[in-house]
Amino acid sequence: QTFRERSDMQEVSVTGMSMYKLLRLNGFGVCMSAAGSSSLKGAEYVLSPLIASLKLAHVPSDQSLRLRVEVGTEEVAELALLRSQVKHLWKVQAACFEEAARIQALLVPPEEERSIHADAATSLAEYGSLYERHLVWERRIAGKHHKPLSRPDINRMFLLEDALSARLIARQRWLVESKLEAASEEAVRRHRQAGKTRVQEAQKMSNLWQRMTGGQRAGSDTGLSSSSSSSQAHPSGFE
Image (cartoon, rainbow, N blue to C red):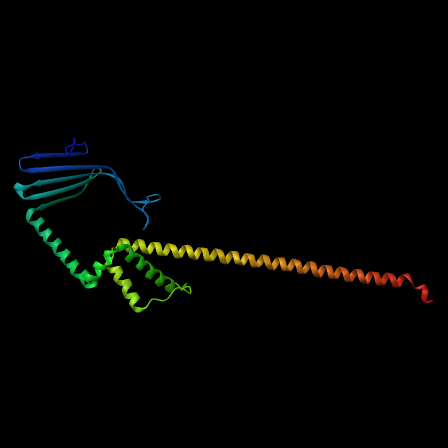
């Protein structure tokens, strides 16, 4: 079950002490979804679908490694490295990793980092709460239950940003901003609905007042007409 027949997409040829590999990609593309979303619905291409060939040659007798990339019919890049150069690159990479670890230790003490990563879900929830309080005060939409961040709170938020991965921080920020945006839209909707309700109540009161004042005028006019008719009906009684 371990050995399977190779498809036409990949060919491996070994001659003597050399090894050559060919990897051909048909319709290769890269899509990117919105931050925090795992769905590719509506995602746009970062790299359009293409046909590419990757040729790798390892010749130990020459202590060389050659890499060649072709896209379509055009040659994009060709790279040739000697074994000594590869070893030097590995040393540079190791030195970069060591320097990154040293800088990370300066930003986040190792014991703090272990504590934060021991329960990443709780740490993310804590960061989300702190970031939400920061945003509501920054945007001046804080409610009575939102307390401003103290200096220890700000330091804790920065510490979590340095300790957690950028991908997790970006997702948590997206969730918080989406929550605030939804709350803002709901507040605007309620405000508009309340305004419409006030206008309707005012219109009802206006209509009621018009009916009441209209009825009183009609009653007064009827009373005056009756009095006038009575006066005109008995003019001869006084003569």
